[in-house]
Each structure stands twice: as C-alpha cells, then as structure tokens.
Image 1 (spheres, protein in one colour):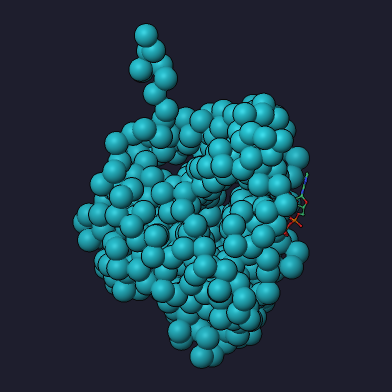
Image 2: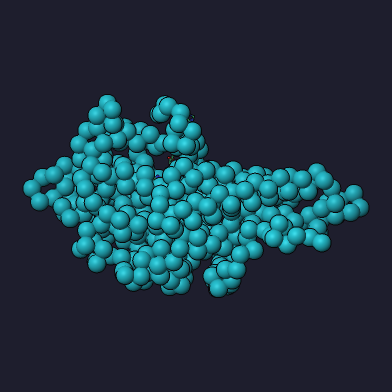
Amino acid sequence: MTDELLMMRIDDDNYDEFRDPLKALCAGFPGAYWRALEDKPADQRYPSEFVDALMESGFLGALIPEEFDGAGLSLRIAAIILETIHSTSCNAGAAIGQMYLSDILVRHGSDAQKQKYLGAIAAGEVRFLASAVTETETGDDLAPMTTSAAKTGDVYVVNGAKQWVNNALNSDLMLLLARTSTGTPENPTAGLTAFLVDMKTALKSGMSGQAIDSMNNDGASDLVLDGLELPLDAVIGEVGKGYEYYRELAQLECILYAACATGDSAFFSERAITYANERVVFGRPIAYNQGIQFPISKAYVEVQGAKLIASKAAAVYDSGKQPGPLASMAKHMACEAAWQMADACFTTHGGFAFAREYDIERKWRDARVMQMTPQGRTALLTDIAVNDLGMPQSI
Ligand SMILES: Cc1cc2nc3c(=O)[nH]c(=O)nc-3n(C[C@H](O)[C@H](O)[C@H](O)COP(=O)(O)OP(=O)(O)OC[C@H]3O[C@@H](n4cnc5c(N)ncnc54)[C@H](O)[C@@H]3O)c2cc1C
C-alpha cells in the first residue's frame, strides 16, 4: 500500500481558507483581462481593477503585525497567497510590494512613520508598491549608485535618476535608496540611505516619471529626480544604513518571489497536463509520449525541491531569524524550476503556445523576468557562494 506520508505532495497543505477566496477573486481577472491591458500604450497598462480588488481583500496586509492593524500572518501564509495568485492567469507584480516593503518600516521606521502608515497600508488605503534602487550604472552592483541626497537645512535635496521602478506612478509611497555620502574602498555600498517618498507630493515637484514600454506588464517606470526635496523625517532608520536594510528586505523578497514562481509552475503544469491529455497526434493523446511526460516530470521534481527549500526559509523567517542564503536558494530554485516548467508547457502546446489566447507566452515572459529581478541569478549565486559556501567575495 502507498505510504501516504511519503507520497504527500507538499502543496497538499490545508490552506483552502486562503486559496479558495483568492482563486475566486482571480477568476474575475482571466487571461482576456491581462491581454487587453497589453494591447494598451505603456502608461495605461496598469491593472488597476485587479490591484483594487486585492487591496480590498485584505490579503496584502498579511505580514503587517497585528499591533499595527495588519493580519500578522506568517510568511508561509503570505507565500501561499502569492503562489495561489500566480497559479491562475493573474500576476501579483503590480501589488506584491504592498505585502513586503512595509517590513522596512516595521523593523527600522520611526514611531511616527509606523503610526502614520502601517495601519493604512494594511487596510489598502495607502499604496506602498514601489522601490527605487536601479540606475543606469547600478543594477546587480549597487556600489556605483550616484543618485544623491544632500542635507540642506531642514530637507534632503535629491538629484539623479532611477530606472525600471515598478508601479512608481501608481503608488502613494516609494522606498528610495540614495547616496548621502561616498562609500569607502572596503565598503563601497556604505553611505546609501533609505528614504520614504510621498509620491503624490514628489510628482508635483522635483520628480518626473515615464512608463517603460517593456515586454512584461510590470508598470515599470524611469524616474528623474531633479532637486526633489524630502523632509528630514523621510529617512528610514539610520542615515547610511540603506544597503543593510535593503539586503535584509531582499531575503523576504526572495521568499515571496519564490512563491510567485512556484505558482507560475502550477499554472504551467496544469495547462500542460490538460492539453497533453486532450491533444491527439499520431492517433493518441500526446500525454502518452514520454517525450512529453518527462520534461514535465523533471520540472515537477525541481518545483517540489524549490517548495521544500522555500518552506524551510519561510519557517526560519517566521521563527524570528534571518534565513540568509536559504532565501537566495529558494528564489533561485523556484525561478529556474518555473522556467523549466514554462518550457515544458511551451513544448507540449507546440505551435499553439505562441497563440496569445492560450496565455502560455504571457506567463512564459513573466517567468523569465523573475529570473532576473528582483535579485537576479548573479546576486543569488554570489550570496550562496560567499555566505553559505565561504568562498571569496568577487563582486
Ligand atoms: C520588469 C523589470 C522590473 C524591475 N523592477 C525594478 C524595481 O521595481 N526597482 C528597481 O530598483 N529595479 C527594478 N528592476 C531592475 C532590475 O532589478 C535590474 O535590471 C537587475 O538588478 C539587473 O540589473 P541590470 O539590468 O543593470 O544588469 P547588470 O547588472 O548590468 O548585469 C547584466 C547581466 O550581466 C550579469 N552579470 C553581472 N555581473 C556578473 C558576474 N559577476 N558574473 C556573471 N554574470 C554577471 C547579470 O546577471 C545580467 O544578466 C526591474 C527590471 C525589470 C526588467
């Protein structure tokens, strides 16, 4: 007889109270909704109705502690929420920031910042969806960051430019990393400071933004910061500690994006298996062919491994410790597995994978971008090499 415990799939956990309402919500935003958005100009592609529905659902306040009127749920459950969204036709990219960016305020924000914003973020009344780090010369490597914030009287004056900032033009708040002093040869990322930017005020004076016409509907924008004045209390935590806070936030980010990737894998495997069972070629469903089965099986194995590591990383985080390279492993494994499953799904669908109405090519693009951002392969593998394997820091 089958040993049920041995055969138990790790996604058989009983989280239906979260999965069922989310699946119902996402059913209201089928592939046709997302495809119609992609037909619009770049600055009109933001999935406002979907984000509104998620904000109203309360799911995005999962991680904000109860003392700040959030749901105070575990990271494991937050991951289930994102995995479920991505297992449907939907993509959480336009809303995911709301779930984790406020962690920097919970850990390092002033009492005034916490009181003013956390409850409102948890309730979905204030949108904290954007974080601005990347610049022309600053991607994987943050040391060359040049956007500067100079303390002048009772304000910081910010000058520079940020690129690829997701949801910047649709968010009330933005986390900004800017240089308040130069780094040192030993520590080139020293001198970066985290700021909380009120976007409505900033976009009226000192900041302008332009939506990027990209292959993914991530609402990414280029921002120009030209004499943007930020009040002194816009600093999050200590001046010059921005990079440390960002690395800390990245661990949470990695675990949540790993969940998005395993959700995408579920979408691809479900679509691939359904299609393989229905599509008859050479007189029988293609699902009988091992050439079709094995790529799906192989990707499935990788997905299961990724889910175990991601669950472990979330458990470490939920115990109050920093998961460190475990979070990088989770994101790396989950994103590689999703890409593998996307490819298997593509192969299974043959030429029809290219037809937009199947949504395979759209989700395939979504899976690809997650291998690179946030925290791409280089950053993840370096973290594992240096901080887990003890190899020298090369970048
Ligand atoms: C859709 C989208 C959304 C984004 N959203 C945001 C956002 O909200 N906020 C934000 O700040 N940024 C955002 N980004 C930017 C993203 O984080 C960066 O693109 C990413 O960090 C990579 O930086 P880069 O493009 O400058 O690549 P580079 O750093 O220039 O690297 C180029 C390539 O070389 C590889 N590479 C670099 N160094 C090494 C090495 N030592 N060994 C091997 N390979 C190496 C990299 O992996 C990469 O493939 C977004 C990007 C995209 C495409």
